[in-house]
Image (tube, rainbow, N blue to C red; front, side, top):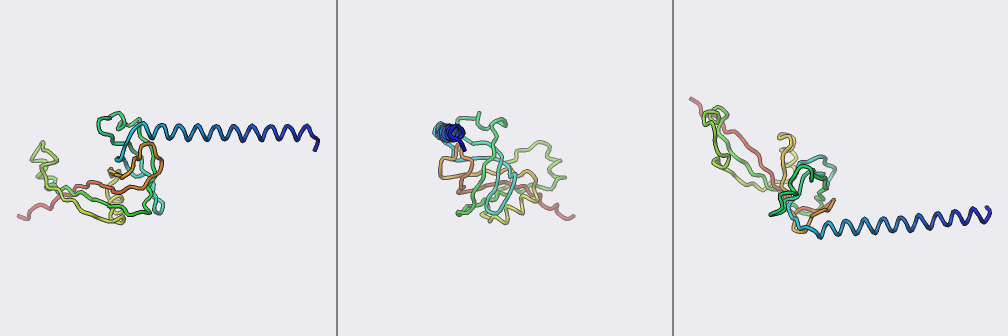
Length: 168
């Protein structure tokens, strides 16, 4: 190989390494800048994919006093790392039978009894199969704002069950 080609290859390699380093540094800086901009410990969304101990959720950050982060156009995908202990909370709202609910006309959802149950990951999976698009409230002890992957401390979700009509 002649020296002209070697110099060209070396120049290209140096430019590629320097350019890649600058790009990596700018990307890292931008991510840290975005993370430091806000503080969020709650993410709300729906499950997109489950692979082993990783769950991909699409949703938004829940930041007190900052409703702009809850807008649909702010939705993003995050991956939940479930390798550490996670508390799963299933909130069950007991509703009267559909016929009785119709008779009520308008009603406040909160007027019906609610029970909080600590469940396991398998129960969450079963409920995800039964209730399509089940929204999750994911809480972390750390600032999760702008993170693509994090370990939650708690995952809470709500389900509604209809009571059986009384037999005549």
